[in-house]
Amino acid sequence: MFNNIPPITRNIIIINVIVFIVTSLMGNQVIGYLAGFYPFSPFFHSWQVITHMFMHGSIMHILFNMMTLFSFGPILEQTLGDKKYLILYFLSGLGAFFLFNLWNFVEAQQLSNELQQLGFNVDAYMSGASVQFAGSAEAIMKQKELLDSLKGIVATPMVGASGAIFGVVAAFATLYPDSKIGIMFIPVPIKVKYLLPIVIVVSVYLGISGNGGGIAHLAHVGGALVGWLLAISWKKHLYRFN
Image (cartoon, rainbow, N blue to C red; front, side):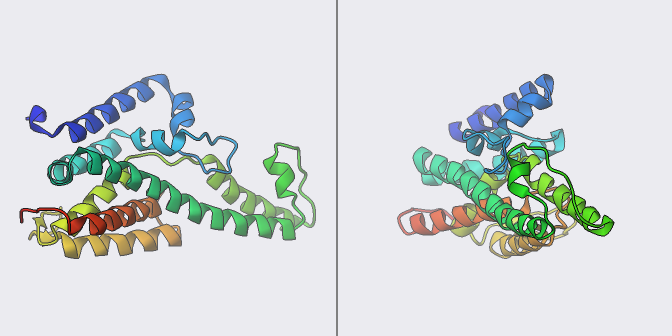
């Protein structure tokens, strides 16, 4: 059965599984080297914009992503062809990284401005210099709270193929809008053209509100946006089966 999967989708799944096994055996140091950090973080390296797409935090994380790719990828690979399918996958992953970190940049700027208004030298801190808190006890407590939030942006990496896969799903929904899929806890199949907008709206809300539970919801939105734009641009040139 696995050999019947088109080669690009099959190889992406294989690479993800191999990377997950290797990084699980080698520990957090390797994960931190390959995961996608905030571009202004001292932990960021240029290759992370690609390598983060092959990193996963848990068995359930990679299982869900690879099952989703297995469900939607083969049809798109056959429809688009190898070249466009690869472009779709990796540009969606890059779009996910960009939108997620664009929001991180907005939040980091707001936090930095508040810290500076309280007298904390953010630039010195980010350069690695020793910085002392100053002011009243209330001001120091506020500075520590803001700094913890800023550390969360700088030191928490983004991992997973979800952004790229959301691009694949969005492209599928664009090219095959009337296709129906079954969703857990929903008793009847739903057309993807109705389901995807709901998922995107919820992801935007969770990403902006900060109630995402450690999931990079805006990365999903970025990937889906790129996938949708590419599918729209290619749609009129494709011969599709519905």
